[in-house]
Image 1 (cartoon, rainbow, N blue to C red):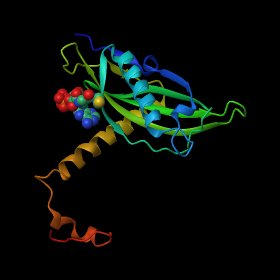
Image 2 (cartoon, rainbow, N blue to C red; image 1 turned 90 degrees about the vertical axis):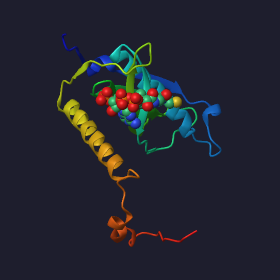
Image 3 (cartoon, helix red, strand yellow; image 1 turned 180 degrees about the horizontal axis):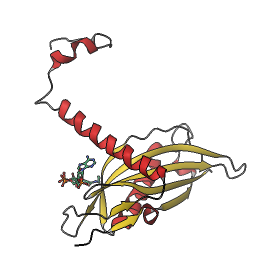
Length: 182
Ligand SMILES: CC(C)(COP(=O)(O)OP(=O)(O)OC[C@H]1O[C@@H](n2cnc3c(N)ncnc32)[C@H](O)[C@@H]1OP(=O)(O)O)[C@@H](O)C(=O)NCCC(=O)NCCS
């Protein structure tokens, strides 16, 4: 069987939305949860377009809200597949907001959604390989490889079966934590 490869350009999704007063929190800024929901939508569209399968969100590799988003700003999300495994893909999303009157654009966050392609029976299915066209593409791919490796190592190190508190006593003494029997 021929191994299918697709360009990361084929996965590009651009989603733009005007921020309405109903999207704001008590502080008058746009609610982070609303932005996360739009990001999830962009990640889903990008991964599903790339894999030609409906996908599910497996995990999100941190979202740092660098700048607040104001009511009336135009938010644009650019999403594309950065990495593919077997049935999983990492979709990178960059979120920017634009003040319509001044044209000033702010970078609000960049984050990485892990998506898994599913068939009609809900089974994980193989996705196409990824064609990158520049060093940045390789940089993003490599960042995902490293992140997945670190995630797996952390999972093993901190599993209940493997964790031995004695090994970490030297570390705890530098932190504001103490042991007290209940
Ligand atoms: C994520 C999910 C598909 C993984 O299922 P699973 O049975 O563990 O699947 P597998 O072990 O076969 O792994 C499938 C792929 O998912 C990846 N994966 C599993 N858990 C993951 C996680 N937490 N983060 C990132 N990738 C993950 C695996 O590495 C594997 O990748 P690969 O095929 O490229 O090697 C499954 O747990 C699931 O369906 N979760 C619910 C998803 C959902 O409903 N999301 C919306 C939330 S409301």
